[in-house]
Length: 382
Image (tube, rainbow, N blue to C red; front, side, top):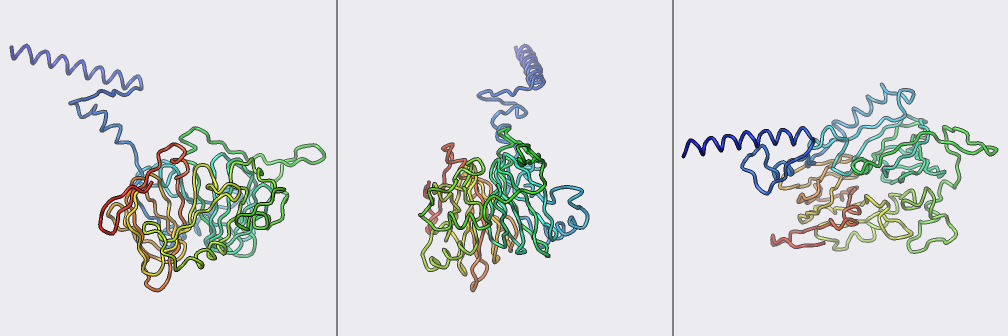
């Protein structure tokens, strides 16, 4: 009897191995309720997909030297773009800083403007250095400086560069990994304007709006002119294309003595002034103030974050591991991680610029968040 059983088991093992090989060759995956074969453990394999990990990219030590080197070696004749994309070590080689977004740093030489283009991913530019960062969006020419945020929405014509006689650096955040996953990527570089009834290829967008149009039209909270074109650029995003850091600082100055939120300190969301919702349908942005010596309580959420310290220095504790950061660094906080922030100064505030895929998760009913109390209990927040 033992010999018969062994033979039967041997035949079954061989048959299973052959079946698994056949399944793999036909580009399928076995999802059985249970398997003793580790090589075909369906739960382990399904959970073993590439995942983003917490990570800090260093601006001063790593990003800035490479940007300056690229400016010496790569001209606009070589490429219309000169950006460094931050790739998460857990997702490499995929171009993603977290699963749904990436951050890229861009340096432009003085008076260097690239031709217009458009694409399906939504993007922003956030000024870091120089007063002459430039983005033209759907005929609104925007010059911006440190802390200013400029939208380049899904399917809106735009171009980038620098005006003036100094280098300027900005960072971008795009939902390109999300759009790529959804197989909805498209780029268009064939910009034309109609002249005498005929489309003519152009390297520069003609100005259609005053340079202060966004602030003049939408710069007063709670009051929106009815006669303005709120659907410009296709109506796929906030029609306010530039958000100035000076306006953000006015809010922080007014509320610097407010208790704030124990898990987020003082946090302000950039919103569409016509709806009060996020500036894009897929990703949203915040400015976060940590007052001198302030630290937040641990927060866990299903949304993934890209945190870019704009002023000050400190650290973040992500899933128990400390990550120190300084101005212009970027920290990846993948969804599902516990995270708390700490200002490293007892005398000066720290300001963080934060990108999140929260809107996408909310639309799919997948957004959840939990917070830890001062007593160490975990409570459901959203």
